[in-house]
Length: 196
Image (cartoon, rainbow, N blue to C red; front, side, top):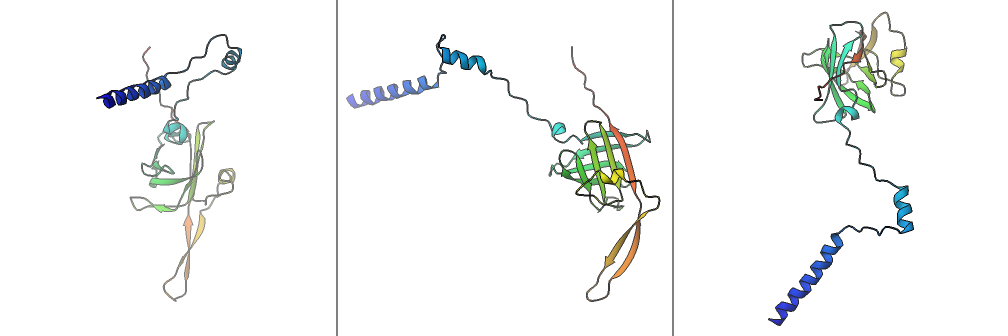
């Protein structure tokens, strides 16, 4: 019985130390060192986590500056945040790959779900001006992606060389005409209603 009471007393004694360690320590007022530290540094609230739209500003809907009926919608891929889907192109739904954060994308050569061929291209969103530029038909420039938009648009279709090999047979080269297609538009701002 004595050992039970002594073990219970030791447990209560240790528990009281644990509970006292949990209490915040309030400095005594009038301590000049503590007062000078508290006067110099103020705790500010933590910023909220960035939203998906802030991290990937290209996401949204865009209205063409040339054709009022043409709109592009850009959504992020659910499985890989480095890809976006571009809907509204004449070719169909196209996948673009993030090359430079926050909003420079390469559109690789691909086939759409409808079976249409999409040539390589560039997609750049200017966050400050709220303007998107899309150009298909010219290769992506890794060193300076903006250069494809600065160059004048070619008057005749660009050519691409297609090579085919079968076993040890000679390769045949065909010249395939690739037409350029461009889109420039502004982002449609989403307005939400608030209670006042």
